[in-house]
Length: 349
Ligand code: PHE
Image 1: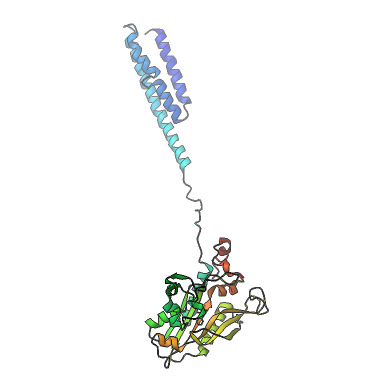
Image 2: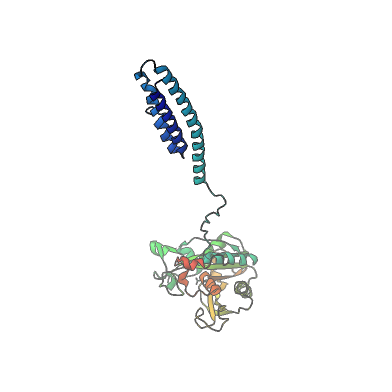
């Protein structure tokens, strides 16, 4: 073999092995393989060019070329393994999931302050033997007015106080939870003891203590021996449970067509202790709602004999109770949907 060919191969070997040692990652390795061993690689071209050599030089040059090919392939094989393993390690390290990192906490909602108060009221009344029931917010005038002894000419039936859904005068958004008195009695034999929390709607202008939608808690107890003393006892216990042992309660005469006698029920203000403040408008008292002994006409209307049965009923403002508990002095805040307001009640109950 001519010394020049031998020399060329020796030079190619030295350069190829040095380059291979310099290939530090998988892409560099691929380039090396292409440069020397690929279809257009230097060694491949050398072997293909053997035919151009003088016949007597071909065998030796061919043997030497093939020997170098095997050597470079072996070198590539072991280098490739190392580079591929390093490449895999690198990807694994880069893609690693750190399972020890704390998770991203999901935002957890909380019950609305009114819902929290409803839950609390249900618990208090459950201990007093009252069942919690719910009724429709879209009512017929029959239940919302007629069965409650609210005559057709009563001002509350005036279109300005009521939100009418359809057929003015026939289907209304309930203006109070009292229609459930009749619904429950129609379906139950006495004794009856229920509370009914829920939304009520009135067509009226809004201010700090009036909303066109708010919540009431209706209460109804009917049995053979119910008296006004039972009503007082139940509402006094409610005030004690909600606002603490030192609250005083006040009943003043009031008129509702479906009770006789009727009262308005107030609690001395828990915020100022009755001294007078912004929440109680300096009066020292906060009205919680109406109450009274169920009117005989209402009992008769659902088929109860008023000579045998008596009962009491009350309808309290739920937002008001929450206001007195917390000092919130504007009822509009509850339906205002301001999360800064609502978040303050997360977990208050
Ligand atoms: N329903 C009355 C109202 O909304 C409240 C009430 C209920 C009064 C039960 C007496 C008895 O104003």
